[in-house]
Length: 471
Image (cartoon, rainbow, N blue to C red; front, side, top):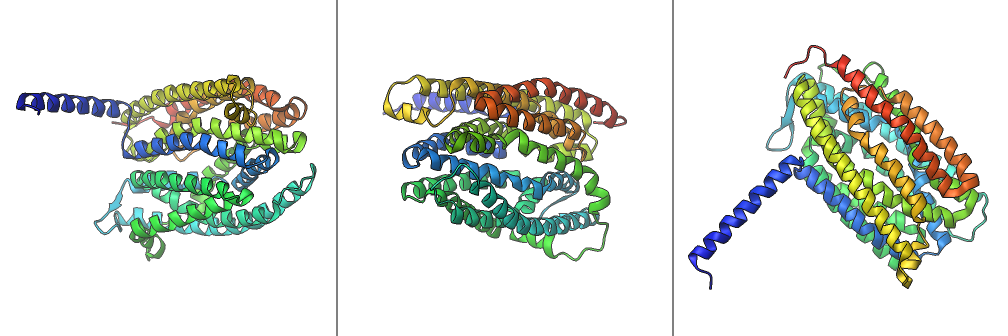
């Protein structure tokens, strides 16, 4: 039985420990949004090996190649979105600096800011509805042509592919809602939702694989994601959405051509270039080396992508704050906050990259059946290590690009296009003749060459844009 003095000591120790955790959380900029963003990525890292193991045991090597190549072909939807989602976040965050939510969830505040936000919603909704229709038919037809070519296969992919394209078109129509919520600084609830959605989506994937759904698995998880989105928006943000969609405002409006297009076409070129940086590896290997090697690349890249996903969990929730500080011209506070976030992102990126490489190295060297079977479905440690190192260089530049775009400008367009062209060419040429290792060498070389220019552009733009600012 505990005495009063013992209980008192335990309470003091607990209080002291809680204080240390709070200080650490504050120093690492861990709020609710970051916490759930990181939890989502941690879940993804934990769920990833489970998914990979199920695919390795339930899918043939050929089927695995089709599964991951489906995802990279669907990434072509970037040619429809053209970066508008990123532009929406920046424009919405500037208007939100003068707005807020009342107790019922409706938007209140400056009428002119609300008018501009409503007009932004109208532009975004029209764009993505048309884009969703184009993506459904364009991806469906393009994928059919791609998968119908060599190498020949007996995998039943046609019906699963067309259904997945249809669901993807519906999901594209929801993109402006997520961008508006993020731009309006609703990141705490949004990232909490994404964590729950991520858990349910992973569970649906596992169940579908175990029940023998094969390539229908991707469609099953997409339907679950849509269902989660409907429940979340209807229960949490229906008044918010009604304000944006049905308000009759007569104040100033955001004009897409004069206000948004100057930034969007630059973002669009950056995003399109990004396809060749992030999503071109697997289709090239599928075409020149077959679905088995493509499946290895796809599974490995899904692990590598976790680095960017976790790092962005720190920086993405802070982008609206960047925009609000810029709108208020609090540049000194902005810079202090930015450098703190940059140190956190780079440290976490290096730590996770090493952990992933060590995991793959151990799998490659362990001598028991489950490990060797899983190791056969991923790339060897050498090309994986080269890809990981390249990814560290790339993600180190992420806070700098986020900082620049929060000014509603895109000075990195030329660099992004150049990176896309060089990476696309090196992937095509080196991938054809030297497979994944050649691709990795090319990708690393280009990042080492170009990323330092991001820092130079950031320094130059910051010096020019912040003249006359105050804290």
